Image (cartoon, rainbow, N blue to C red; front, top):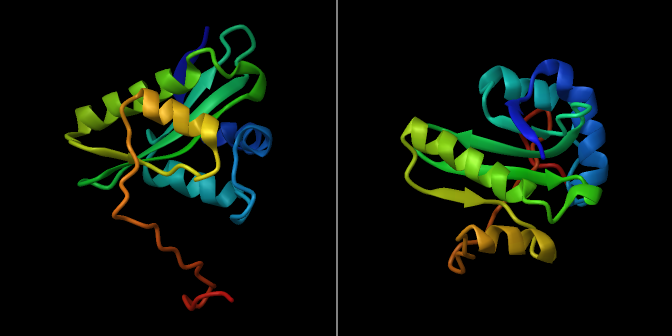
Length: 148
């Protein structure tokens, strides 16, 4: 089993360690404590943790971001030794409940194209690829200009 709660600044070191082993996507910049702390300051309820109730260790996470209009899911991660136990499904359901309470009407998820196991979790919850869209990104340097 597992329990849920929102992350706090005190969770940041453990969360970064958890993501280093449980999260996918090595092509992006490494997560940082200041970035996670900024998220928690801006939207304290966005980062949802699944915890093992026996030792309070993080076994799953999802970021459920709501900008007042759209609902976005990021960083769904489950500990490798705890996969296929319903944690991802429960995190998605928990995030969607948050969105409904905030007035959200549609949710989207960022999922790596080659992460087949994650795609299965999203598919099982009714998410589908939106073929007509592509994600466009631009890393920002300190001066706001694109990095090369």
